[in-house]
Amino acid sequence: MTDRKMFEGLVGPQESQALMGALRRGASRRDVLAMLMAGGMQATLAGGLATAAMSAHAQTPKRGGKIRVAGETTSVNDTLDPAKQSNSTDYSRGCMLYNGLFALDASLTPQPQLAESYSTSDAKTWVFKLRKGVTFHDGKALTAEDVAFSLMRHKDPATGSKAKVLADQIEAVKATGPNEVTVVLQAPNADLPAVLGTFHFHIVKAGTTDFSAGIGTGPYKLKEFKPGVRSVVVRNDSYWKPGQPYLDEIEFVGISDEAARVNALLSGGFEMVAALKPYSVQRVRSTPGYAVFVTQSGQYTSLIMRKDTSPGANPDFVLGMKHLLDRELLKKTVTQGLATVANDHPIHPSSRFYHAGLPQRAFDPEKAKFHLKKSGIDNKVTVVASEAAKYSIEMAVVLQRAAKSAGLDMDIKRMPADGYWSNHWLNSPVGFGNVNARPTADTVLTQFFKSDAQWNESRWKSEKFDQLLLAARAETDFAKRKQLYVDMQTMIHEQAGIGIPLFLPSLDGHSAKLKGLSSIPLGGMMAYGFAENVWLDA
Image (cartoon, rainbow, N blue to C red; front, side):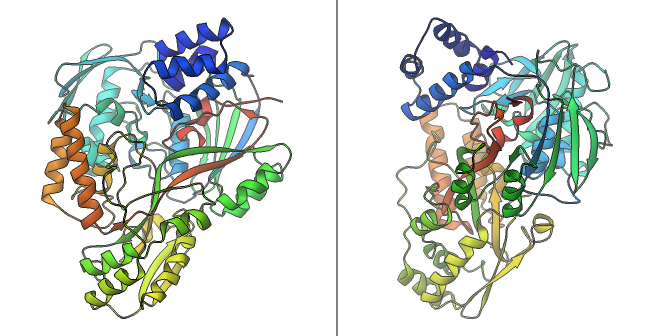
């Protein structure tokens, strides 16, 4: 990748060109920081991007080599079908093999990928011009029909798409030219490019029903795929991004046990492993030749109390449990101070729609005891936790101690990571989930809180909330739109059967020889898109 391309991934093409020119003329980090802030960027984000820009400018990518990478999940249900992917390991493989119309940069701004440009006058009808000269791994040229098929298949219930609730807003997708696609929505949505920049909306060949070959337009071709075991990909020499990717081959496996991942890294068997626990950070950093890559994001682990069954159907039980969440203690003990305190709704403080005025729910054992007694639920409550839901076991232990002080006998049922998402996540009356960061407020609210969402964790249903969500999606006035999101955060905070104590950082361990990583706050390993960006400095 050229230096300019690296900057485009951080700030966009126009800004990257300006920054490149300044750096070539001898600009310092202070100069770059001033340029970013002059463009209206917040100081914290500008500082991070200035550091990343200087680092990227100083590095020259090298071509060749093989790496082994370990994700945090593995299952016989692993899939190469973008519509059905549901965890970070699936997403990582998807980013190796496929492209979307857009990709999200370090500020979560959608940058054109297979869509070279787009236009809309009303946020309801969108015209996308496709990039020319793009081919699939089997040599077939990308066409508008491929894009139309890829988007519309999410709407078909038979597809089983995890993004169906997002795709339902699409009314029609038509090929309106050799390299042009027109998307018509049922109602305006100014966030459509960001939605289409998420993992599920990767583009596949029209008519594809068998995804075992992983044929896409992405930076790597599939060499081997054994669900629950490993995948091997090799460089796509016909990739449409000049000079990319850099590596010859990537072997990707899932290792659910964090200690095993760390040991695999430090023994020299892997070049990168995902999802370190905070207490492993110092061990990795203190080992010569290894480093930790930190990504702050809106990822969270949720305490789920299903509203459609006991005990979560009782609002006093739910409120009592939320008051038992000792957020500051969890931040200190579970994440070694690396997390951000949350307030039982999924919008991260960095979001422009964050409800800063919502009073922080306090850890209050006496208030919890009052509501639990009022609920009448005085028997033992079983809470399901697993290594699969990040930090959920540690959180459950802290919650168990607090519950005891409030007179509640809480039993922790630890389930194995393998099969947790399919067997326990949405099925346990009280348990834990883990939600990766989403690109927009609309996306996370639609996927996890809309009444008919497949991943509505607590089965909380509110017609008023659904109406507000659709209204916010269509609202083009920022102040009015923010107020709608403020109202929805308040409703989730007060009514949903979800406790969200912390926003979690992503911590990835890697060999110091692995270069090219930069932070994209959708998740670790460059929001799972590391494959086309990293190289080995032998």
